[in-house]
Image (cartoon, rainbow, N blue to C red; front, side, top):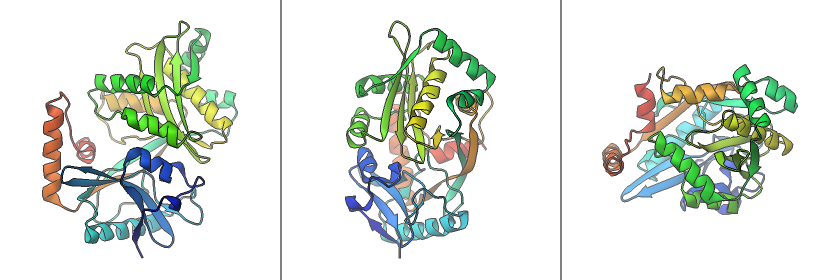
Length: 327
């Protein structure tokens, strides 16, 4: 029987990191897990004024082995049960698109689905073979950055990382930068399962940053930033060094988190995905979805959000609508 679990002890340190209590409370004060006897999926609730949206932070997991993949059929059945439960209990007004790391294998009935994927890098080869798997251009600029004295360091300076990521995304007219509170809580709540990296040139000037969250299965590249004109290869080297660090922690897969499967030629998304794919990455494709339970409140939420952000110089479109428009 489907129900919501919200006791912190439900998810332990052995649970996949994006399903843990320690991660969920970095995102929201209201969170939990929808579960039955066999499976569960973690969520956060984002309440703004009278509107409540639900966001899944991880894929469906099985109790018997939290790191194994479900069959598409079992995932679909469970998600459809979750949708019916949420529709009946009115826990939220709508299920928004999940975090970028979440790629569903199935298309549940009752959901508006769009193609979605992610680029994954196998960390089992040694360092030389990981580099050898990169596109030739990536390999060349990594070697140049090393020759030019680019240094990759870990840091606990949340303010530095926040400022760099915010500046980068503002240049892209994007609102999707993390809050400073989130970054601070991430390091506080998950000190052994998160890393902040910084790329510095030979004079110590910041070139870029990365935020990684990881467990024994995979490392997630959650956010990244760059200087306006970074040293050639510094960001490529940052990714390579982060991969090697994750490999040293026993992580199996480096997940570059999120890929639009259909993008407009020449768009920023095409450039981002070209950058990711050239790390010798494999594209895992699937689906993202949205479910609206209260259409009136959903439309009002979108109007409110567009107006609020428009007054601050940003444009807003629901992520699912944005992806559908590119099809």
